[in-house]
Image (tube, rainbow over all chains, first blue to last red; front, side, top):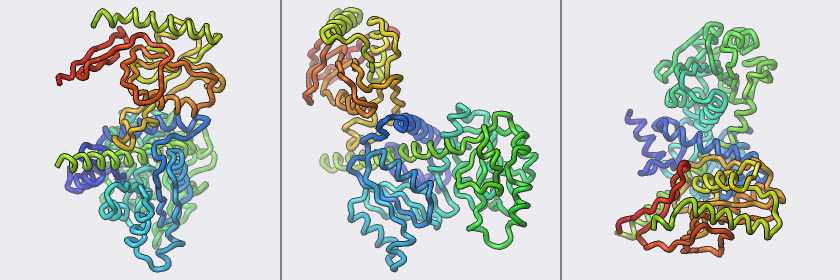
Length: 337
Length: 169
């Protein structure tokens, strides 16, 4: 384990190995990732009841702190918190205090003064959720909802849950991640999760201009030719072309990109016949993926959205559980002392 | 002690008690729900003994426990599964051991999130007393009084037997 992994582990876990923040998949082992998936499975069942609510976070306050806009991620976090019976505050910081000049630290101090128990943080700067987790009052859990190009761990875990549902497990699976890996925090978290959970091969398929340097060091093979890369795949994960993050001429044109790296029925036919098609959304139809594929029988894109709620319920309740049990142990310890 | 905990006799008691209360209340097709893990084994046995055709439900009460704010979430939670609607049904809720009554409170809260049952009959194999809530089983296999250093645990599912544990204090 590297120094970085060890420090991620100690920041995210209590002394007895329970989750207390969820910032990155680095430093979390297969057993814990499996616990998250298993717990999420139980929350899927809750989502099928007439009353889709459990009392775990009753009386607790969850603040959705979005420094970067998002519809799907924020709404599934909000729904997840509400199904756990928490009170939810949605703060869109772009349009809020920081635009009046308040610093991040001051914003946080104010929110802590409102007795918040959990911050769900989305930020364009890599490492922002870590920074907050290191400085926040003990007892407050931080969940990373996507930071810069660094990580999007709940998205990766909902993808793992979707793969496990459809494939039964990870053993022997060949998985490809296609498209704009360079700007994708999701891809980094997915590669890490797939390796930790034991997938046989993780391939990235992309033009060289949309791959980070040393991408193989993340734990994947590289294929520039999608026709070759689709061979034998069990799972293909399409990434959104992040037009808003494109600087300079990384792409010849959208049409050219679609011809080479867009997923259509012809390319999908090269994969294993039961290959599932995934996409974190929002999809650009006709840019990364053909409508007939996105809406086709091999697509599990809408399962991903449903699973997103269950994964977020799992991570929120586990992190809150870790915080409360840690605090109780500390109080018990100080009574004895 | 071992003779007192003859499993067949406990199950006979439970079955006879259930038959009696079902007859008293005129309930002909109850829905059976077991609380994981021991209660699920017992639900399986009682379903056969009572000749019920409908599959039984399994409840994992981890999301409803009242000690989340002390010990956090049970990492081994499994999905609950109720293969029938609870709405307007007469339910038999089964668990292996009742003590504080907190598990039953959690289980009843969970059942009500599936719908409004017509009634709930509570059956437990063993009643250890030591209640902390005003919850009493309708049917009990055996009432036991343990020494403070003793615990009981149902082992199973095949064969079902009750283990008396000495905690060595």
